[in-house]
Amino acid sequence: MDLLLFGIQGSGKGTQGKLLVEKFGFYFFEAGHELRKIIASGSELGKVIASYIDYGNLVPHNIIMDVMREAMDAIPHGQKILFDGIPRDQDQKRDFDAIMHAMGREFRCIEITANEESVIARLLQRGKEQGRMDDQDETSIRKRMNIFHEKTWPLIEEYRRAGYVATVNGDGSIEEVHARILKSLEEFGFKVR
Ligand code: AMP
Picture 1 (cartoon, rainbow, N blue to C red):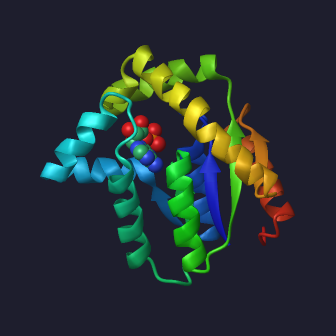
Picture 2: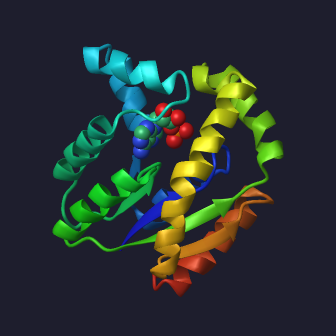
């Protein structure tokens, strides 16, 4: 079974995702990371992508779906995948669900909650350390959080109605949050050794 991670910027998805990859051997598909790799390649497509990411906007639908399709073609069928950062709006959800259905891939979702005011400071620090332009000012961070509320939240609710979502409190140490996620995964039927 595949897994989707949801949560606002700075909720710890990346950190928790890495731990889950170590534990379960998932292939980690981080949408933002995939897009930043294309930017780093210096291609024309990368320049287009940067013109969205740098200002905290979602990249156009076709670009992100092509990136996902390309990755899915390269991942061996039996390999379980951990998705972070996709789908992010209703159109992406529609295509994401269709791709997963066509490939016979089942998934469940973990939503990590976080206190927005306390994560803003952490994100500003990340912006300094990693040179990420979209994390360097509070306006851009808040803009991305608003996109999360307006566009991503409704689709999480849809998955919740389908019984696919476990919500995990993201407050506390990395280990505490990890343990809560493992408990939810066990309830979903993942084999937690
Ligand atoms: P993240 O690393 O998840 O915070 O993503 C960084 C940025 O990449 C976002 O603010 C968007 O500009 C872009 N991005 C990541 N995932 C998506 C997606 N699924 N759809 C559109 N844009 C995305």
